[in-house]
Image 1 (cartoon, rainbow, N blue to C red):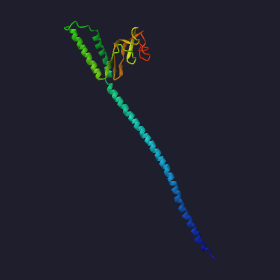
Image 2: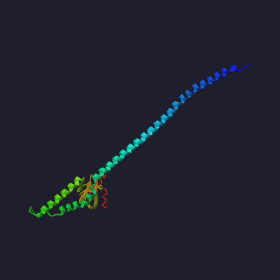
Image 3: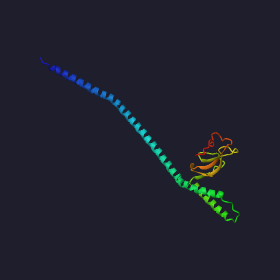
Image 4: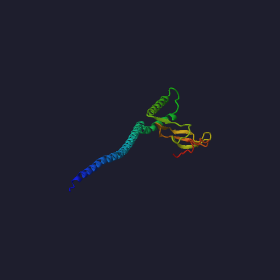
Length: 208
């Protein structure tokens, strides 16, 4: 009696187990692959979104920097003559005072007439040069006092005028491209009807 007939059955069992393993492994790998791909895809999308956000921020910062540099360049060009002009304002003041205080010519042959005309021409030319650089004179005679443009040097009782009215301009003011270059030095009235409550004439500060 021998045991050889049982060997084919063992071989057949091993073959069945091998086939089952072969058939099972691909199915498990196939189930895990989509899940792994989904994780990697989500990670890649998150990284892409982060990079996009960083690029947008960098682009915005670059644009803001470009605009700021352009504004600074424009301001440098606009106000390049400001310091020099401020030093020359006293010349314009002296020309104006000379014209205000000069005596009137006695007649057409009076040499003083020609001198005054020369001073007037010089003043006009100086103001023309100022205007070419965006500098304008502020002469607020008769206007309401504005602390943004005027400096009150004294107050005078004058019930006939609204309080805070500029009654005398000691020195004209100047602005350059809307920026105050020098405040006008003025005298203002008080004792009359009050200016509008919201107006800058209320509460004139003569200590400025």
